[in-house]
Image (tube, rainbow, N blue to C red):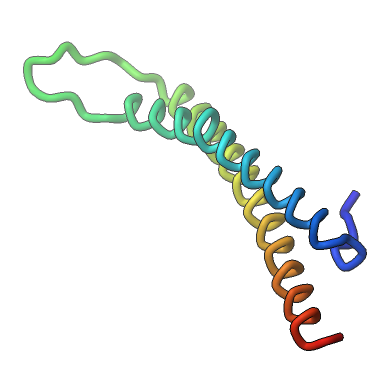
Length: 99
């Protein structure tokens, strides 16, 4: 369920933003980047003299699908974070303008 950000206090918005930032950092470090590196290793062309391994198309497709799924989650977190930052900016502007 989506929270109505205009009803939150600045403190609540900052707390939620901090939580989202930590969640995004953890996701990138522990989810997205390892999946990306695994796909890179899987499709990397090996130099001459290095024993070549056969990588099935289905393996590449599955790894790419996992990376895309992880990217969608990353984008969702970015959107939520941006919504909070816009709400914080608006709230601060209202305070400064005396609204």
